[in-house]
Image (cartoon, rainbow, N blue to C red; front, side):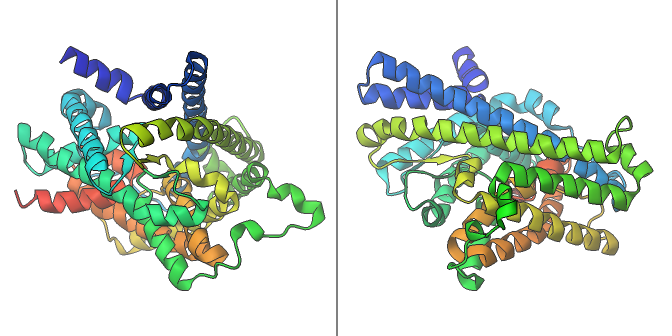
Length: 424
């Protein structure tokens, strides 16, 4: 158990180390030189660390918007939810989560080796969070003992095997190849966006074909454009709230203009770092993974984190974020006005950027600019409904966590597995 605990908590829960091991294994299998193996492994780890730090900066730069929307819509604190919280959940059920990770990943490898479903789920932190969610659902369903791990393993393995396979054809339309697929809770929303783009879009006009006047060519730089957009978003929300009220949720020591400018610049910096990490990791992990594909699991395809697809349509990411922020905010206002849910549902700015930004890239791949806008707009509405309807299935465990990070496959599969769990 000590060895298993070390592997689970010290290795598998660290995406950089986990992918570094995968890269090293692939390079060793290809009988690369010691120098190439060390270099490829180190660059993979460093790339993932850079990506992770960029992600953290992005999250921190958009988090204040959630508090602003809460104040704007006068959303009260949740009164009927009494979760034990994510930290306590991990402390109390960490071993079950770890066992689920190991068993589900082993099943994924076996299925990839023996069946046509060749994708291998390699998004390290998601290897942890999906078991985290399914263990929570099992507990909410009244399961105990070994049945908790069995239940969570079945659903985690099912997701890891089938979800990346479903999105793979849509990823191919974006990238033009099959070197990777997605292993991220964006898949449900991205499938919806891809289908809407296919049915209602116009593939001849891409988000990346947007023409800027010569004087505005600097806007083609996604990091500059995103910084400006975030600056404008903060300014507009701050003015709607009022300068005095906005300071309650933003920063009491800074003016609205200064705070908004710094948040916009921080967002752009985070995106720059993230994209650098993505490029660095891709340059190493894909060739290294070829060793595993050729020798151990022929034709295996890695299922990776969603920022991996951002460089293929950076304009679409920004369009998806803005569009979903608008449609989800309108939906949140309507939901709050009619009292659809007896608890607070807050704006999901993180989901809007990562999950729906990815969905917009997929929508652009199947239906161009129109597909990206329609797909991300509808996804923004669905996101609010998903998180609201999933909360009861996690009410006493991690409902506080799903309110911040849900509205995606975490919520969708909480509803699916929770509905089945109630049968037991």
